[in-house]
Length: 441
Image (tube, rainbow, N blue to C red):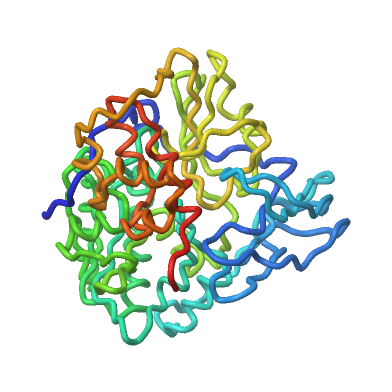
C-alpha cells in the first residue's frame, strides 16, 4: 500500500474496550435531539410541544439537499423545543422527548421484500429518509455523498476501518460483529455508484477485524457474492482515518486543495455509516442509535454499546457503573480530535463515536513556551501546511494571509499540537483562524 505524508504515533490506548462485545444499554427516559446533526442546514421540526411521538417517527424534516431528517429515538411526549448545547459547544434548536410511562420502545420495522429488484433511486431515497450521515464525525449526508455530479464519476468505494483515534473501538467491534452486513452495505454502495472497485481498509493493529472481514468475504464469495471487494491492511499511523489520507494510502490518488474525494473518483464511508445503510435498506430502520465507545482509566466498566441518539452523558453513567476516580476531563470523541465538555447533560449525537473520561492522574498540564523553530509540526502535518507560520498570522489577525497559506485545508487532526515540544496550542490557533477565513464557493 501507499503512504501519506506526515502523521504521528500516539499510544493507541484501545486495550480497555478492544475485546468488549457491543452491549445494548437501557432505553433512556429522556432524549435531547439537536436539529443540526449534519454538515449543511438544520432540519425543520414537524412536531410541537405536547405532541406524542413514537420511536422512529420523523420529528424534523430536511430543509434542503444538504440536510438530514431527525427521528424520535424513544416514544413519549415532546416536552421542549428550544435551543440547547451540542457536543461542539454550539447552541441549536433541539427537541426534548420524555417517556411518560410504559410506552412501547421497540421499533416496528418494515423491511422491503425484494432488495435485488430495487433501483438506485429507491436506495438513495431509503438512505435519505433514514437520516443517515457520516458517523465517523464529519456527519456529511450519506445520500449526497452517494450522488456525485455526473461530471465526477466515482470508480472506487473505500470502507474506512482505520479508526486511528486513540481509545475508540466502536468501528473495530462493528467489523468483528457485523462483517456480513458490512459486505451487503458495500454491495449497495457499488450498485448505486456503478463503481468498479471497493476496498475495506483496516489498520494493521486491528488483526481481529482484518481476519473477520476476510473470512466473511471468502464465505460470501463461496455463496456467489460478486461485488469487487478487497480487504487491505494499512500501516498504523494517525490520522490514517481522515478521508484524504486513506484515499492516498489505498489508491495513491491525491485529493486537490479545496476538493472532495469525488474529484479523484473515490467515496469514503466509515464502517458505522455503512452498517446504518445496511439497516436502512435491509431492515427499513432509521438512524436512531449508534455504537459508542465509553472508556477511560477512571471508568468502572469501559464498554462499547448501542446508544439511542439524544441520550445525555449523565444518563449513561448508570450503564457503565460510574467512576473509580473522579473524572477531571470528559472528551466527546477521541483525545486527538475530540471536544472537552463542561457538563454531563450534553447529548450523544449522530457523529459521536466515543466518550473518554480522564482523571487528574491521566492529564499532563503543560505551560506554553516560545517556538524553537524545530519544524516538527511541519514534518507531521498530513496536509503539508506550515502550522508555525499560520499561528503567527492568526496571532496578528492577518486572516487573509492565513487563508492564502491554506489554513482551510487543515482538518484539525491535532498532530501539530501533539508533537510540539514548546506545547503551543497550535490546534486552537488553526481552529480560530479557520473560523475567520472566508472560503470561496
